[in-house]
Length: 226
Image (cartoon, rainbow, N blue to C red):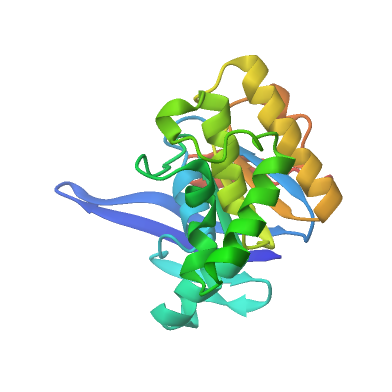
C-alpha cells in the first residue's frame, strides 16, 4: 500500500541543514495496522506527514497504492489525498462552528458528493461510532473522546485505503484512549483499511501488527523478523 525509498527531509537553519529524515526505506502492506515509535524528535510526525502527502521530501521516492506520488501535479495529488488517505491527529482539528455531522461531511462535500449523500454517509458513520444522538452537537458540546470519534468518522467518510493517525489517543485519558484504539483496530479488521499510527503508547503498539522504531531520523527496527 505504501512504499518509501530513500526518503530524506532537511530543513534550513542558521547553523546549516537540519536532517530530520535520513534516508527512510519502508513498506506497508495492504490491511496492515502499523505503529511508529521513537523518542521525541526522531522524525515520526515528519515521516507521517510525508507519507500522507501533506509534506514533500527533500529527496527520495514515494508510492501509495502503486501511484508515484511525487510525480503528480498538485491538483491531481489533492484529489488523490482526499479520496485515498484519511487523517486523525492528536488534536481533533474540528471546525468549532460546525456540528459533528457537518464536520464529518466535509471531505465528501469537497469531493463533489451531494449534500444528501454526504449527510447520509456521515450520519451512518457517526451512528456506528456511537454518536447517533450527537449529530447536531458542535465540538464544544462534546467530550474529548467524542470529538476524536468525530475526527475518526471524518477520516473514514471517503472510504480511504489508508488512515494516518498521529498520536490519536495522546490527548485522551487511558480508558478513552483504549476505547478509541479499539474502534480503529475494529475498523482495520472488518474493512481491511490500512493504518499507520504514530504513538508513544507501548501498550497500544503491542496490539498492532507491526512496530516500526525510529531513531534520529532513521528506522532502527522495521518490526519484521529477519
